[in-house]
Length: 409
Image (cartoon, rainbow, N blue to C red; front, side, top):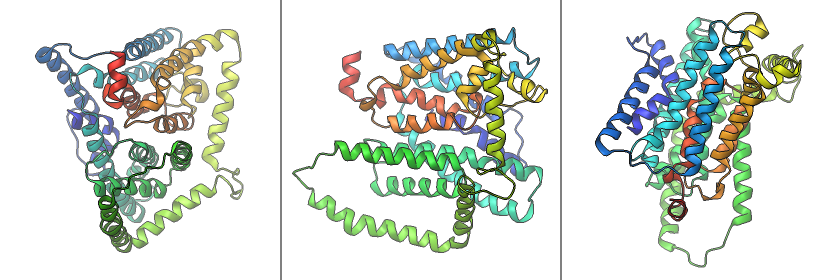
C-alpha cells in the first residue's frame, strides 16, 4: 500500500488537477484514500496479528499526539469559532492517520514508498509547469487560475523535502545511480523555478549545512574502486549531462521564463518595490498577523495558557468564522490552544526528532530542519499531512541502522 499512502499525502494536489480537467468524484479523494488505508490496517491486524514492534519513543509520540488532539477537542468548548473550529478538528485527524499508518501495518516498505512519492512528485511538477503556461496565456485572473497557481508553494515545499531526502540519504533511493541522480537534479531545478521563496531558501540552507557536516566528518578512503570510478566518469556523467542539455534545449524559453519569475520573487526579499514594503505585500500581511497573534496571546494570563480555541484565529482576526492562520504553525498552536497545547506539540516533536539523530538512513535531521523552517513560515497545522508522515518515517525501524534497532528492541 505505499502507493495509496503516497496518493493520500498528495491528494490535495491531485484534487486540484482533477478540478482543472473537470473530473468530479462522488467521494472526496482524501477521504477515499484514508478509508483504504484504514481498511488496510484492519486487514493487516486480521491476517498477521499485531506484529509491529513499537519502540518507546514511538509509543510516547503516539500518546502525546493523542493528548494534543484531545486538548484540541477540549479547546472547542471555550473557543470563539462556532463552526470552522469543528471542521479544522476533523481535518487534523488526517495528520494523525498520516503519522500512525506506517507503525500500524506489519511491514512498511520505506524505500518503496519514497520511490512512489518521488516519481509522483516529478510528474505533478511537470503537470504544474505545463498548466502554468496554459493558464497564464488563456485564463489569467480566472477562479481556476488562482486555484492552480496557489499550488506553487505546495509543490515547492514537497519538492524541497524529497530532494533533501535524496541528497542526504545514506543509501540511494533507487538502486540505479543514474535514475537516482536524474530525479534529484530534476527536483532541485523544479523547486528553484517554482517561485516558492521559503522552500528555495530553506532547501539551499539545509543542503549547505549538510555539506558542512559532511566536510567535518569526511574520512578519506584508502581503496578506490577504479572500475566504478571509470563508469561514473566516462559513462554516467556524460549521459547525465547530455540528458540535461537535451531537456534544457527543448524547453529553453519556458525554463528561462520560470527562472525569471523565481528571481523576481526572490528579489522582493531584498529590494524595495514601489510603495510595497521591502519584502512584498504578502509578507506585510503576515507580519500584521504575527503581531496580532502575539498581542492576543500576551493580552492576559488565561489566553496565554489556554488560547482562544482551535480554529479561532479567523474569527478573531477578521471577525469572520473562516479558515485563516498566522503562517507560523507554532504561533497558530499557541494562539488557539495556549501554551499547554504548544508544550504538548513540542514534546511530540522532541520525541520524534532528537533521539539518535545521526543514526538515520533515509530521512535525516537535515530533512527535519527543512520541515521545521517551513512550519515557521507557511501553512496551517491541518495542511501538513506530508510532514506528519515524515515525522513517522524519521523514527520507523527501517529508517534506523539495524544495530541500533536491535539494541532498542
